[in-house]
Length: 454
Image (cartoon, rainbow, N blue to C red; front, side):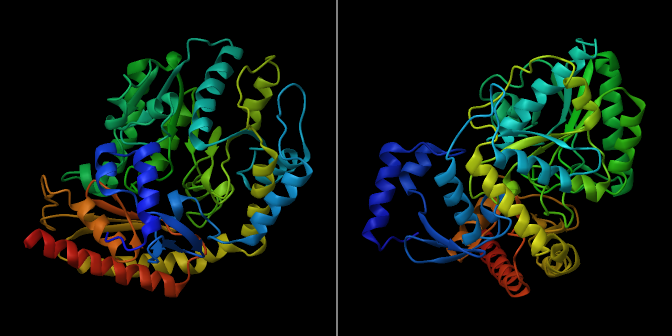
């Protein structure tokens, strides 16, 4: 990125001298300097050099109602003036958190009417680990401690969250996973299905859950945790046979099911939750991101009534955070859900913008670099390959990062997960903006192919 604005250089110097960014190669960041984002509106961003960028990732999957919604700013401002902070420890509460609990329960799957609030999805999954083990101890089965996750699943980057997730790069830093967490294969047909049909692979991947339960011992297994659709792992959409088979297996065994809805929740699939889309009926659901459209940090765990009934008989649950149910975050969450409901944004995603996005995205299947385009709702993935027929990848090229750089330099944010480009735009994206996204994506694919052949 060529820099013309002196202020950009000043901000980049501050980054180099003082800021440690998440998920970053610090040497590379110091050498190149970050792109400085200075403002946003709708589905677009502007950087400090004045470049307009279509944000195909809704921030980090989170800006559901788009940038610049003054209603959310006003909700935060009003609450800050009335009660900027108070905790929910020690037999206290405040109106925003209680009202938000009710509103979340109203949109959650039937039978899930209680919420434990956190500051993020990572904290939500730490809460899941604590709550699940506490639940089984109260049930007189303290030996049920093992939680089964999936390879390449993502559940945050705290110690417990990263352990529940199955990303090897995270496990290598910090001697993870912690004890009591094991993993099964992911339902990634394009990358790992081999010669199996998608349906056969979906059944095989689901059967790995039962295999692991029996290997660990059902008397030792506390829960299975999974994203309805894996997000950070590359928008892995399970074959149609996967979730029905998983539900069959879960029905056979005395374990809890945790749906991580941090990405899928609050409309991303065209339903309120991914669990609604797949009819999953989880015992616990982790939420964050779309809860406040990312305007202010907030997460939580929605808990099934039968689980709460056990917790209610168990004395203190010695777990929580200073900012659990923060009043300003709760006020923003309330207004955000009001916008989603009153403007029928999720209904519009299901009936209009999601079908249009999926249709337009699949036009990229004809590109020489594209092995597969997949998507659901306002989620999409583009697999970059050397050979379309055999799914052969480029090796040692970093194709995804090459494409990501071309995207950023040409006014589009697409995220690279290995050699898979992924998108998750704001739920308010229009047909015209979807056209802009696909046109820019094709241009960047062309530039990537040209660079590879050059």
